[in-house]
Length: 278
Image 1 (tube, one colour):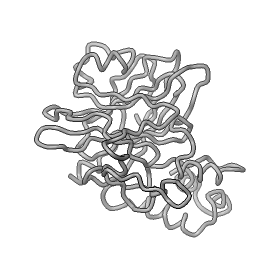
Image 2 (cartoon, rainbow, N blue to C red):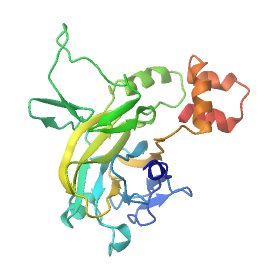
Image 3 (tube, one colour):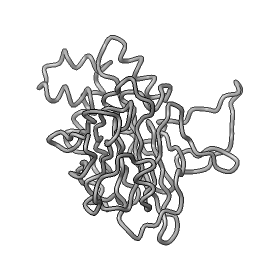
């Protein structure tokens, strides 16, 4: 399983007619119009394996945002890539796609909200607010599947007020459709031959947005670069032992006050870029 989780994530070569992929296959840009931006993962996802993207660029003037989900259709078998994931791809059957809105799409289960795949009671503190429990653990648990948290939340680009933006992203105060938001899809086993699909937005589990998905066929991730979402980039998530590059980044970040301080260090520019933008 660890070998499967260590695979390099990329977009499939089959995609919507308005999509342009970068040479690495990890960045998808809709080059015109607002539709025909449907993309797929290059390979099927394993249970508990997240397909995570970061919103790189927005385009004003359109209504609607990123759409994400799963499909049991091998992209190579599609006669044509549907213009829209919703409703076109879903109407083909064996596809489950979720529209991301400016408000959170958290699924309310019976009696309480879903946190980390486990139903939580509606506990409130003395001030009448629900206590924050984000980012207290190294992993986000969806059912019994652990996803490393270190890549689940986006960071602002270095700038005058970037530390303020970092705090907003970290506490999920910005809408999930904002630039630098990170949105992922994962499916977890639920009994013999079935799975539930969960959407993860900036490190928070939105709950099971689709239930009892048959797992008799491989499931590919679907990302629709739709309307106001112009460009997305895949974020690679490391499940096993951290790479030397990751360990190096963590060591450097541990000894600086803020990411902009990296500019003052005598380090290779590529390493500075990696440490800043993760």
